[in-house]
Image (cartoon, rainbow, N blue to C red; front, side):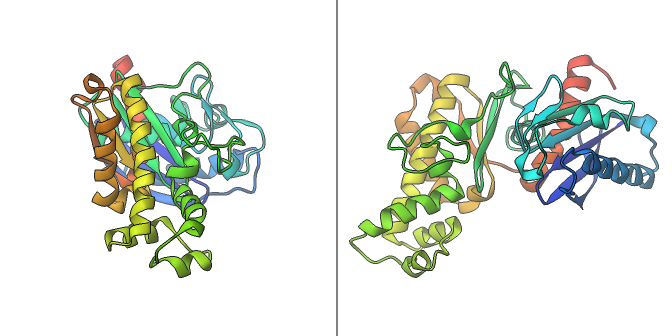
Length: 328
């Protein structure tokens, strides 16, 4: 019987779980609620294991058929040890050794990585970056995150902080404070939160009417509202969209000259804004970027959506056990 891979994408509200075959094709997927009542992480990980037990039995496999377990976690991760350092969205206090805890339940290898890294790996194997060994994935959501794949493997850096691209400083006026404690991070001006920051900063200077003025006054403006108004021709929202696109293009330019990827994959909720954002990013990227570095590099929209996390979590086993060690 063929081997299977178990995958978990842990989020603050739900955990997306999946089972994949040894070719990284999805067999089944489901989700469970995230239990944040236990600050040690043990209860949540036990819930995930119990759910895997039920699901494996339903597809007529056993745990002896499991090649490995891949887990994506929202927080800084030491890839070598499996320790998560301060997953605040999960209300974990201090360090939690996810690998060590999960290894209590299973006999197979357990790999743990940051959720943005595994999403990048998912797009590399089965999404918009398929077929390329050098891929950068940028997630544009409430915050801004990313992952860098170089020569087919995730770039972690010497202490696991590699590819924390949301904290690259682009706003040198440091107008907005980031959750990291610093100011001027690209997350503060080019995420969904960043769009709202820019709207609130610039609207007092408006010299013309905007269709979202009432939303601003009611403190109900969203990134989607801004992009929709920009598509309808609202000049203020077009200005905001162009500012956001310029920041993202600058980030793409930096990663292009430092890692020279084949694909820069844009994912997350903001990536669905469409051409008004994506085309502005591409135009400014070409204006900014050293010509040899941008040659052959494509900026593309992510394809996997909500499945990027579990696909990439399974991709940890596929990359580091099947491909690297030749185990099947």
